[in-house]
Length: 264
Length: 332
Image 1 (cartoon, rainbow over the protein chains, first blue to last red):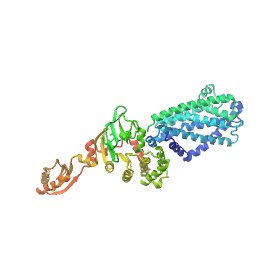
Image 2: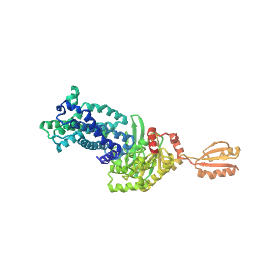
Image 3: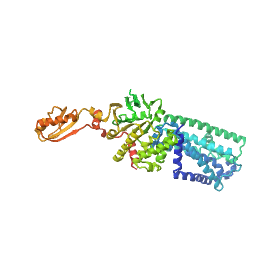
Image 4: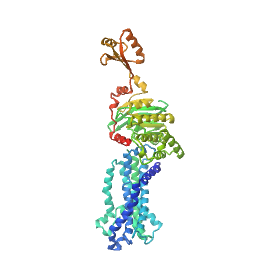
């Protein structure tokens, strides 16, 4: 897929050269943790069993916040494609002898790279703040890999969908509307923020099928437990397979859509 | 078939939405090394022709051979052999001029050392060497257009397509662009296909011109050939008296004689260069007194009017929104 290299490096240059996006990217993780940590810390008072054995709410919520960061960056991944079309730059890419899909996949790669950086910053922030993240039962290399896989897979699911939408959308407000419509349901019909025990029955049932829950629960399990039991390994295996199958199917769809449908 | 043809279209046809026939069995041949101008009113099929030849869109029927490759079956090979300077601005404002060119060179897999050398040569050619590390956002309109021009050349293409290269530019910048286009043609030995709304531009740059309308070629030739095909120059003679004017109206060498104001006659003749001495003899033989004598060679405007029945200046660019957007961006 020639073109993927130069196009991805272009995306990343545009990102790290923009001082505002860099600064907000650094500050935002602290906001998430400080606000959620304080707003919902009373949940711990209902009993530690609600937090799946986490020593504090920040440790509990980390899986949710990491997932949300992946999710939100993913939702916006198609926006740049629409601006490339509006500003004419896409025309230059379309007359070059490169695969059409490399135009779209460069956005997916760049957005994954940004997510990795944000994940690193967020974990660091969670460790630094008082009464923050505690790895009570240790944290192995395997745990780290599982954590990264979960965030990236859930992000790939939504980057695929939203870049595929952007392949045919010409107006930025259209995609902003779609983002606004889906972000809250995705967030609140999931186990990202709240333990299932605090949710209404129907909501908790629906949340089981949300890939956002799968990622949040996977990360939560490794962060809280460190070394995993066989049954925990089994659950993580199911969640990660679900995420991987969905991501692969959607990436394939995006590949076909971008090869066939992309135009000015 | 012409052996030197680098582009040859074969009954190239494009129908939009099943009814709008933008291009109707177009057959043109473009020779290697020439500057070929495509002239026509809006909706004539100029941009459609270019878009088909650069494989941006695919034909409804027919095909074209570009540098030996079929535009339908070998579009990737076609794209490798051509450079395109589209109507719209296509460089990235958030990157520097140099970075834009470098990115394009990587699209074409140009080896690094070769890319560096060519990029610097091109930057020098259009006088952008000093500002190459500045973000394109900070470029003036003319600088930006020059960058667009060389962005189509970093992979050393055999053929360069220029679609309305000076649309929205002021007169000074336009003439400057012409100078660069000529220099590129001479130094880089590239075949150029040019479309334009500006007759002066096509006249100044193109060796050969095709006038197209309603998706068909109406006439092809050099600017001079097209003009001489019009059959007839105009001689306007102003006389001292009404009697003299009446006599000159009967001048036998004229294809057509008309009154053109008080005591003034407009004579249409086959060839003014040959007819003028005969006219002067006619004047002296009849002892007429002439106060003013003007010879008008047909312009490309007259040619355009003759073939399409329209004045090109009445034409507005097809996509006003796009044009206005470009002009706004250029003006900054």
